Amino acid sequence: MLPEKRDCKLKCVCKVNYFFPLYLTHFSLQSHDDKAIAVVIPPYEYGVVCVDGVAYIRVNSETVRMTDAMRRNLAGKRILHRKDRSCNIAFLQEAISAERTVILHGYSSSNSGDVSDRTIEPFMFVNGHTRIVGYDLEKSRNSVFNISRIGSVEILDCRWKNRADHKVVKTDIFGMSGEAPVHINIALNLRAKNILVEEYPDAAPILIPTGDADRWLLDTDVYSMKGIGRFYIGLAADIEIIDAPGLKDYAREYSEKYLLQ
Image (cartoon, rainbow, N blue to C red; front, side, top):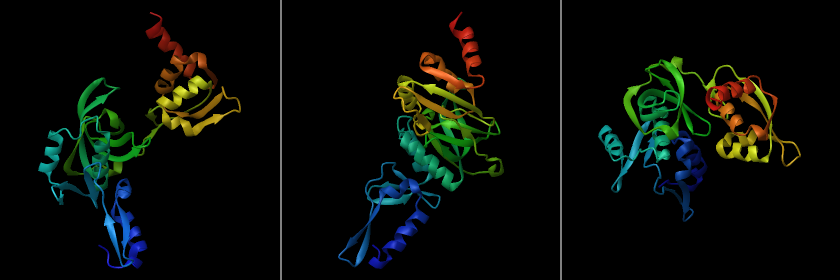
């Protein structure tokens, strides 16, 4: 309990410094009798809270520092199962704050077509916390990992050793990453626009209305033809290519290889 009400503003500022933004909505300050301020903390949905790089967890009636044994126990109980995406996000956030290496257990990769463990130094979220960027220790490069494809997250007692190699990896609205962007400009009818927003929510803010309820413009950069190519092939009748170098060629080659055999 804080001693003076006049300290409320100061304490509100302090909590931003000491608590990661992910957790700020999980507690509040309330006045009591105009003399004191109480910190009210409801049950925390993630189960684990990280303060200044230290993980804490509720055990019975106490909040205690999380030990490696507790972390292994949580993983053993499958609390970090793929279906519980919020836990994976919380553990990755903890690892970033503490600058720790993690193992992404059971990562399902669309590129390699296999399920394996990946040891990475995670350092930033992209696409609205749907993907994590990390330095892959096995491949010695930065990669983007889809959080929904992670089986579980294990935080290792090993600090980052490759900070100098951590580079921002840009991704497009289709989840493709790369270094050489290609600018595209396409027009979508209402059907294509609705499907685009439903499947790729990051597209919603950049769609341009034309004044015609059945015509929307998508003017953006992509880092691979694979993402937009799959979308275009499925909805070619609903999309007009205004300027998209390589998109028609990708669709033609894909069709000849896989659809016209």
